[in-house]
Image 1 (cartoon, chains in turn green, orange):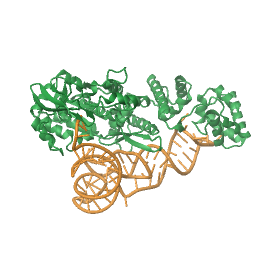
Image 2 (tube, rainbow, N blue to C red):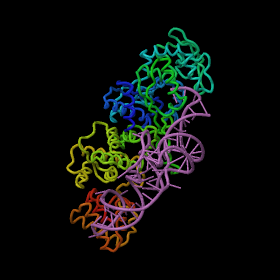
Image 3 (cartoon, rainbow, N blue to C red):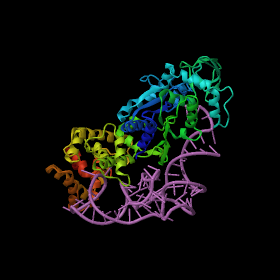
Image 4 (cartoon, rainbow, N blue to C red):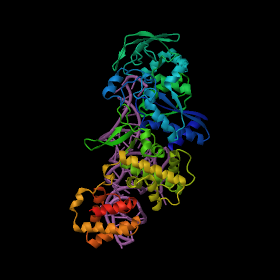
Length: 536
RNA sequence: GGGCCCGUAGCGCAGUCUGGUCAGCGCACCGGCCUUUUAAGCCGGGAGUCGCGGGUUCGAAUCCCGCCGGGCCCGCCA
């Protein structure tokens, strides 16, 4: 059974209605590593529903936390200077670097939120800042303050340094300087918590002393307490989270105790997951490096970036094909081709009811289902391989011609409208991929003028090109015929076929190799090719 | 101090929960074919003491214990 279904089954043993939560701190661009969170939550939601339960998935923006580090790309040059003063300020109160966005939070989260629909994710979105503003946290905050001693004891069990005697589970925003991280709270009465703006290692305080009304958005619960409070508020029964929280003595463990004793709520069913790392080639050393995605360091690959080169189903597949706790590595370079192939293979296995290796048929089917953005297609879609699309998109004059080539090759047999639309999208994505991520050797451009290297061609080579030009002028060749014809011509003029191929590439793209000649030439304007060959 | 993940063919991995046709998949490689394949074919093939040691069992990649190697996280804040 797929792990998503195992979770769903375990949940249904506990009850029929479920709220599956996910959420992230808006500490920079939201990348595909963060998607584990929402995608898993949504997958479990789906599985619970399919098993007859009721479920709702939510996504929570932790936009009220203080900025601890200036995230990329704001940490460079002048911007870094500008944003320095916001260290320690809640994200939601920091301006956007771009006037198109409402604020810092909007700048970093909107591209993500707006993409969710494309990935078929159905979640209710919450904002921590708005929840505090609405006063919904007031009661829970009061309960936490009343149970301060108990909470401190729970946290101290896992701390090297115990919390101070006058510690409170509440962080106030300084009325004078607007910072949240710099204040220290000491006491509280009625609806107010007294604080002093003392400063932290990364943000200086202003020395102001005052009171924050915890029924308003003048401060917030500290993270380890806020999390269980949120479980209570939203009735969370299940939540995926990064493995850092899952560690013994980590925030899940303390949250569980706090939820039970302070808020009288059972901790959600935990679904810890591993990080996603991004594989890239180091520009200087040429070494392949794996780096954990990090929004603050700018090691990111965002949802819009994903959509520019890969279908949304592929990301769902990426997440659901392996267990949550298995580390995942994404490489947008050459391995993307294999990844596309794998997805196509899984789809084929689904429709032909076969298994792949030791993946049980049932497992393959489930993974395929979970990978779908919409419902599973009624019949197997026809796919143009991405590998081929990556060549075709560089050869074709325009998209229509590209589609014509695909049809004439019978890569799509009697294609439906959807098949064609799909092929077109793949072509466009392949185009972006070639432009932004493909290794250099897969890229080529038609040489605008005859490359100078061709001056040194031998008589035999010239003769071969001349024959090719003449023959092309005489009749039409199918790609295969044309390819075969090159062998014939090579024989006629007495050079090795590979040599003639090489020369053809040299004349057209100024390189020694390229896409298969038959397709390549067939996709180009015939008059142009003839003219170019005769120029030699 | 504590916790997690990984270690299976050259490479990437599945299979471990629920022990017994589980020794597999993809890529790479090798061979053959279409009179010919430099980047869209097809068919076939080789390859692994399943990290090491011990235990449980009729039987272990799979369960238990220990160890080694690699990666990561918590013990600040979130």
